[in-house]
Figure (tube, rainbow, N blue to C red):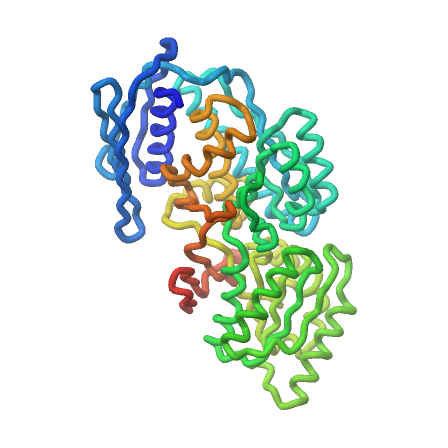
Length: 466
């Protein structure tokens, strides 16, 4: 790897460490021809509490620069030579987002996050004098697997070699073979199905898999005294996979999964399914099981709103406990309809989702909220980070090539601290989990707000009720 490219990559990594800590960075633009230099780099990462501290010492041709993010208030670094390997003009990246369908609101959030990140990256590239910029091409998958594949084929025809999304595991499963065959790098910000945990493919997932999320509902249920559980889940790879994980973990907690309903994706009406659920609950109650000891776990996306339209018509379904998933955490659809919002806030729908680590996300959250008028789901922060990781990888490789970018990302992540925190990947290219927030919709004087009710510590395998 060329020496100056390495310096620029380290500079960018340090920049991302400092974002959110409030430290300014000034990069002096480079204009001289590329030169080859010998670089010695020493990097130390210290974690104290929740605040990471990184010290980077770089020696270039006898000159040593040391940067410690918590000590330096303003940093000026001169990169005295460009090594871009021919990169110039607009470098395309694709984004496959569900701008409509059951994940439409999430897709809107992530679209804004990606656009903000591209603008931030391009502003930085201008500061350092780079002669290329990122350009993002966004396509709506409609939350449909077939459409996601069609749009990826369109991207491939345009020469796009790296794509953020799709968000749904059913979509990702559909595009995987095409992406692998054509060496198109996919970075999904939210696909969690364990079925996609495969090594040596062209998929990275900046989110943990459901082997972690599947532990939360049973642990939470145990903590509040639940004895019986009914699962309602989408008939797709994500729904099937998460339901299987929850069933397995419920056994460990001595909770009986007494029944389940597998429901279709994106249906306009779930009245028949809700009637069946109410009958199942009444059957348990007639056997002497108190409603407050029964939990219905709902594993859907925006279908939850349609489901609750019918559920609110049954008195018994107001009396049982409910639990959601990452598909319903921060789901704006649940507060758009007053009747649905009333039901959800009354019965509670604690919904877990992989959480950002640290406070770096707050500034990006604020910027997204200003655009869309609501708090985004945490996956939007993964989308923002994905853009920066791609930019770092391009700077390190100096060429636009899916295979090259794929090969360098694990190295980039070793020195990268983004708005979602550190991103450590396992052997399958999936994010290693640290913690989940469990949030529930709450009525406030201003309207509705998602508030945390529990935190799941993945390393300790423990749910803490708040």
